[in-house]
Amino acid sequence: MANIHPYGCFTHAVVRGIPESFGELAEGGEGFQTDLAKAQRQTGMLTGALRQKVGLQLIEIPAVSELPESWRIEDVAVIQGDTALITRPLKQQRRAEAEAVRRVLSELKLTVVEMGDEEGGSGGATLEGSDVLFTGKEFFVGISKHTNHRGAEVLADTFKDFAVSTVPVCGGSRLKNICSMGGPDTIIISSSDGAKKTLRVMEQLTDHHYEILSVPEDAAANCIYIRGPAKVDFLLHPTAEECPNSIPVCVKLSLCDQWKTILLNQCSQTFNTMYHHRKYLALQVPP
Image (cartoon, rainbow, N blue to C red; front, side, top):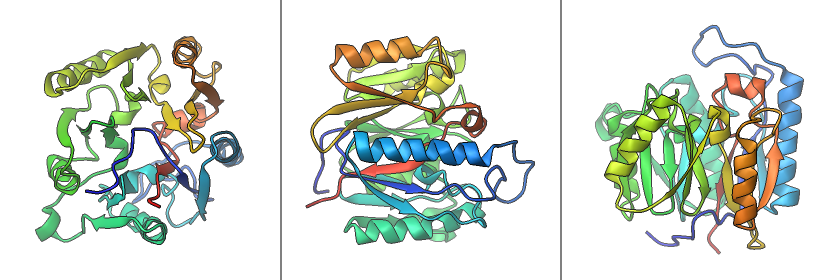
């Protein structure tokens, strides 16, 4: 596989708008109480930070009301180097979200690999990007109600240059609810009992050493490390109002490593209800 870039180096971000059906769940369900205007403001803050502060080229996909969960764009593709794997979400309706994302990634000249909906090739595989943690050295795939072992096998077949390990999601609905990368060799993880169980499995399976930063609140474990086009390091994380006990730790990390820290309103009560899903795909486009 060509064009394996250093961890965190991105040139573009792909985002999707918040639909009018925001708060509803694909294929029914009770949904949850939301504030559409607030969510749209938060998305504006996120896209503004990615474009103006981090310096990424932003590609915005319009919202579609018929796809109420389409703003969770991270779920429908896993990207590493010049290869993008279009995933297979658990819910049938959510699989339609991939069409617009697939088109954008193809226009960016990435090699697009399909999991497919047929039983033969994917064998009932399900995979959502919020269960996939790439550390720069290997992949961890969280086995949850959204992602199964067959989905992890398809990912391993796609990214053969990297080890792929499956871990149980013990402390949340999805793996990235409880952990994320805070830098090239740093894993930020919730201090909950379930997250600690997941971490123990990760440490047993890996051949690499990672610094572990434990944070008291689950929401604070969902940070985003980006090395922007200007070769400046950024750590995006929730605000102190949202995670008062954790943010001093994140800020200390960023200051120690001379990173710029950006506080985003991306894990407020509205997005907490939605499991803190990331609302964009970051990638490096090959020259």
